[in-house]
Image (cartoon, rainbow, N blue to C red):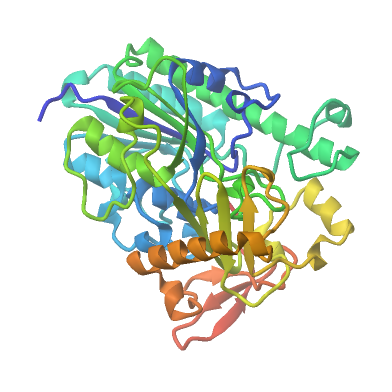
Length: 454
């Protein structure tokens, strides 16, 4: 096997959605902008799950979260069904040196079990600690190129809540995210996100500069992405574009250069087969995504007619599935609860503002259909419109087919919490309330919550 294969740097953040400068938002992210101008920006990229561990598991195994076994959060008791399916394990088996710095969120155990040869010893997962550690790792890797290519996984906690405290004056000239009214409360909350994303961008810059200093920029494929939408109500843990739309920028060998912008519909599960094709290894049989290389080579304008996403467990159980085409988004909920599941929304100023105005009592339809052309903010559910009946029927059938083809356990009814795993009750007001832990006899025991949700 040739050792002129590219190095791979996978840089990811928490809860950033597409809220960075290259996607047109007035945010101070010059380093992420620089990466986009040098690489390829995917404007219509989506996560396979708008919740932390399932999203990352999907990207790193190239399949739906339920196929990977990751139906909930790793630190609450969920795990990959087969750790050997992790990208790091596959790359290691094919001669890559595998390194982890910062957040991984796919296992609560030893990361060596999912394929990492070397794991950073820093326990602080913020940019201030992770970026310098990643820079030192890159410098060391740059001194031993004869040892083969490397895969470096760099994960930042930013832009997860809690955001940095900001002066109220910083909210004067900020625009809230699309679903929210323009009020002092929402502006200040968004200003705090701005502070967090600036720190994320600083970390990205430190890592990119380290690649430059080591002379590795031209030989390294850089993947910059996030797990899902920003941590605001109706966004993170939501299957609309507010939750599933993610930044995806790729720079490096294989044609990922030149400031290209691609509007094709892509899913993060497409990255694994893309890497296989790029480095010349056989695609594992479990992959469900599609290589993006035909887009880069100009052979086609689209590689997907549809993409899928899901939520099962986050802080609480909220089973739902989604299929999205270029024109339409269809969401089906598989639980009788008609109201928001509040533990699945992180605390913050915008959440509190919505709650003060009755959000907790606003019903959620069991089926939702949005016209992405005439309703890009996805606020008008047209599932009952007679003129949309044929579209709804088609998308129902597509979702049913995908669930069957991927052996979705929701087909068998409600999914029980695995023994030893923990969740909040759907009626809780916050993820910080006492947890329900599944017992061997099938019961749920109330247990004190050990800490904050990541």
